[in-house]
Amino acid sequence: MADRILGTVCLLLGAAMAWASRSYAAEISYEPVGPRAFPLLLAAIFALIGAWLLVTGRRRVAKPAAAPKATLAEPLPASGAAEAATAIVPAAPANNLVAVAMCAVAVLVYGALFQPLGFVLATTLMAVPVCKAFGGTLKGGLLGGLGLGFGLFFLFDKVLDVILPTGVLSFLLGGR
Image (tube, rainbow, N blue to C red; front, side, top):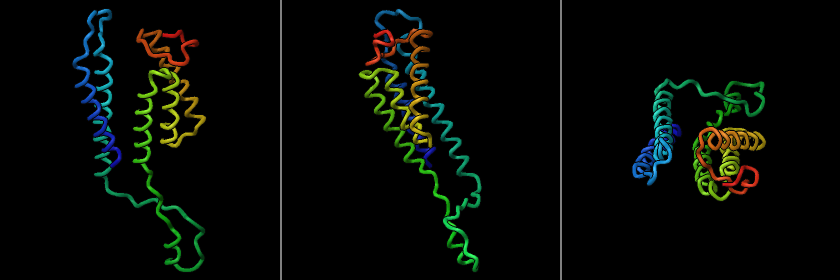
């Protein structure tokens, strides 16, 4: 269910991004691609991910339900089967809606902090709750976010010549 909700949100977000970017136009064409290409690319990625989540989420629902996994809450008593059945507690389902909500809030905060903090720090801060939402550790989120932030910054800034905000790290990243 959470996959289909997230897929629908991604599809709607992709459509909204494509709709909003149709009016982007540069007064002076200084690049061959123009300002419309990046949001359209992101909209296409969001739409593809949303469609994939809708299709795979539907497949999972259509499969026959397997016997639920059970965990032992406490050691089985040596007496009858009825007592043993009460000792088996069904495994708690993964709380996907909480993870989806954490990711959505992280993306909203990321958008708010993108300009003042800069790309690298905002990306690092976004990676931590996203990592935690998928069962990662704080250290893993920080290290992954820093690697992702610096790696993507240098890819976009140095290789693709796309200007990203440096924020409070302008003294380190060249300050634009």
